[in-house]
Length: 485
Image (cartoon, rainbow, N blue to C red):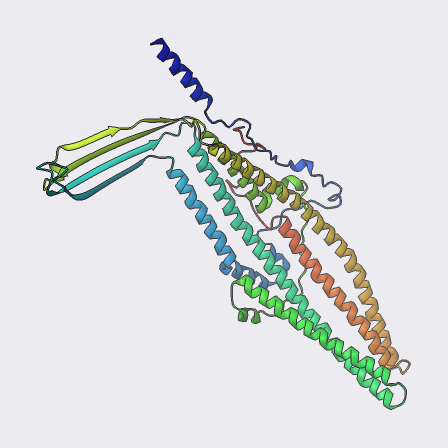
């Protein structure tokens, strides 16, 4: 008897020592602290201000643009896809929540059988009979360690990320529409300059031909004039293509066919939106950039997945109840006394699984590290994006001031050339040459103005595009690594 006890004890010790364990597995990712991303020098000369308004595009002063953005927000297929992903994530929450509760089912059936007399004596053999049965089943995994709750919380985190992604998609769409609209306006300005240059080059060519006929110039000047006319015609074709491309891009963003773009009228000249940077930019970006909030939720969901995976290593208890009733032949199933029931409490502990549980946990750790790396990437990119757009706006402001002076000087030179021609001092050809310089200066000024508005829109998007945090947007947990390690 003692020998049996000793053998049992040794066997139990061997079994328990062979239990699978999660020791040595943990994620490596660490969330970046925004305060460590220094931006003091890059943002030294900016003034604090409020975040962009939710309807920031109204500040650009164009009602047609506002209508186009509203139309895009209703019809764009990308937004429909984002909304579908939210509904998909909500369904996964329901599935994870249902897994936490008990399961109950009932069933019934009828079976007929003919048993051979050579194997079964009478009255069973050589006789065809029916058997009717009904049963009820109940089972419940008690989830002692909260693994199923962790899985449910992970699904909630994934749903919150998908919901915020949908809001981020709307912000990106409004920015894309505004930027395409700016490009459409600039393309029309290009067309104006190209037409004016074509008129100027044709007038210059006609005058040059007259001078050649009078023996003042030669064919070289005529060929040069022909080249200028051809170049102006090419610029008109380029401008028309830019108009068509911008309208086509807007049609796509609006979720409509190409004819919708043809109905968009020429935009008015837009002014850059007045946007400055809040005082505590690195920390404030965490709550006002939808992509950052969504990335943080994915980190939170990944940490819950780790917690859920760790409970698979622990013992588990489940409860089951089965009841059934059987009636043979023509007997009424409900009057039959052939019934049974059983209670099935069960205890389980993983002993050996070939490394499946450790591989699963290692995969969850890697998914957490990926989520952390993506969050850190978005955070670093967001801060540098804002600083870069601010630098671009500052530089564009200086360029615009210089180009405005250049354009004013070119206008004054053209006015003087016109006065000299009308006074009989200068030639009309000289005036046309100065006119060419004025048109080139005006085109460069228009390009800088369009770039300034476009950069202003990009800055708004970099600052969150009017994203306003709502209750429940921010993850509750703030730990850099899961609590389970």
